Amino acid sequence: MTGQLFVVVGPSGAGKDTLIAGAMAANPALHWARRVITRPESAGGEPFEGVTETEFDQRLARGDFALHWQAHGLHYGVPLAELAPLHHGRSVVLNGSRGALAQGLAAYPDLIVLHITVPLPLLAQRLAARGRESLAEITDRLARADTALPQGLRAVEIANDTTPEAGIARLSQALRG
Image (cartoon, rainbow, N blue to C red; front, side):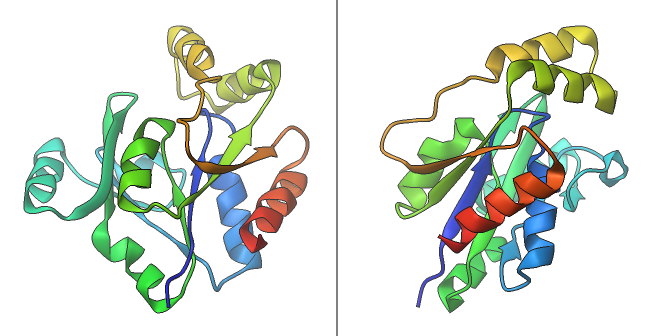
């Protein structure tokens, strides 16, 4: 039996981590794939494993990652073990990247993309409020916010334009199919 892989994507500041955490709390049967990222774990956000670039490169060379990509000056990897629940019929939720969707589709042709969207003015407010990026970085992120998804994907658009509770409810509904 094979579970369903859900890849959650959207621009920085769209609220992906908040929505995923809420959906996980609402449905503990889901598995949230923990990523490996080249940043300190103290940076916060989602639960992830922080590693150095050297450690990341060594793991990549060993073939430890099911998927990997670069974004915002960081390296991201999804360990093969984090997707193992799929082989036991359990659905897996992954905070992914629009830039890695073609790679994901090649490896997991049945994946479903859950595309979190936010109007640009609200996205700009959220990015400024979190205080992690400079004005130039916010401008750059906003310029990439409307990046189109690759063709050939099964995708569901989820608006996160009101309260976190409403966004969590929308994501939870999409995860139930």
